[in-house]
Length: 315
Image 1 (cartoon, one colour):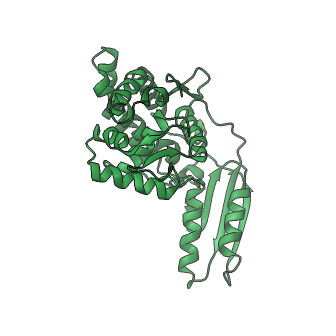
Image 2 (cartoon, rainbow, N blue to C red; image 1 turned 90 degrees about the vertical axis):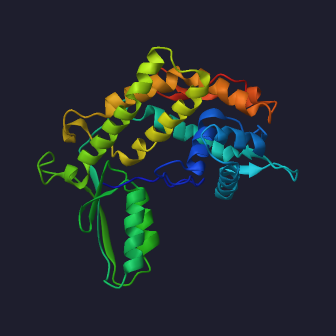
Image 3 (cartoon, rainbow, N blue to C red; image 1 turned 135 degrees about the horizontal axis):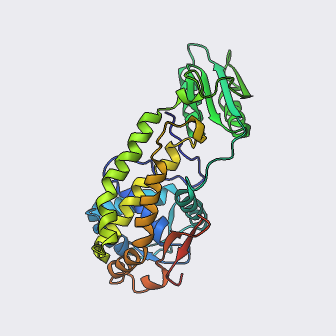
């Protein structure tokens, strides 16, 4: 199955298995800060990540790496350093939070169109072949056959530009971008064969199994603020991979029963119920190092129209 990694101007760290300080800090900043005016002391970041068992040295390394990636910037020459989210990062966080929280809310508008790419590169062209495959994966394409890649929809502009950039100077290379429809769309030779839907379903089911006990604890009022921050962040950190790896195929191409809706319902219930508690805990943890924390820390939630919005806080 093709994994879609967004091509953003602000480079987000790649998702990895296990505790990853960069990825965790990106989730925290995206969930709980929504202003580039907030001055964020490094000691407050260390304390925030300490809630998740991240050491001070790892927390400071994550800060340094996210600064290099452009997600955060240093404010002024003072020591110890004070950080802030860049306006560009704020806009990207808002867009991504909306994407995470609204994904799966409604079925895709389906016209039956698929963007199809076919290419031929000389045997000596290992590097450009790798570059093409990487670019296709980042644009949400999946490999149907050896050199035939597909993605649902009809917007061919981004992939056409990418192929021009990679292959225009590669001697002997040929490629075509087409809009196609399958005569037997639901058959064994149809487009769904390009995707590991069984693996994706298993990932959704594993998500449900992992957090079902947490949902019961939330319903029973057994999750306090200390646990809420870690639990809510863990749920979002686990959920945020799905909009990037799920091709969002039309329902008639999916095996039944399809577990995405059950996983989404669980995520939204926990995420919504624990928002205020998690925000309160983050303020309490950060305030000794950042007295203005309560003025800036907020949290995102899914609103009635399935679009995310900041809630709470004054920033």
